Image (cartoon, rainbow, N blue to C red):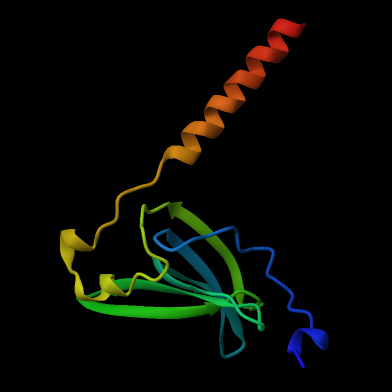
Length: 133
């Protein structure tokens, strides 16, 4: 028997397609007394977990020299927005090795090929529409 037969996980539409190595800024809705505000957490995605419950992703950052990791469920209503700031170039699914690195060694190269391909295809489409007119 599977849990998915009873409950269908609802994915949060505010979370875009992310992958390990991406630098993201997660906006969370927090309650302080009777007031509600947005709290941001920016860092590198080191782990993605997919499962019956919808899955989760873990974001790591270094704050005042101490590594801080936070795990966010994909179907959490408290996650208001996720911005992808950089796409990191990695060759692993789980980036646990980043925990023991510091400073310049912990930086990841940026993956840029998708952006270049998208702009090239947009330029080609514009040229095709101009020649057909």
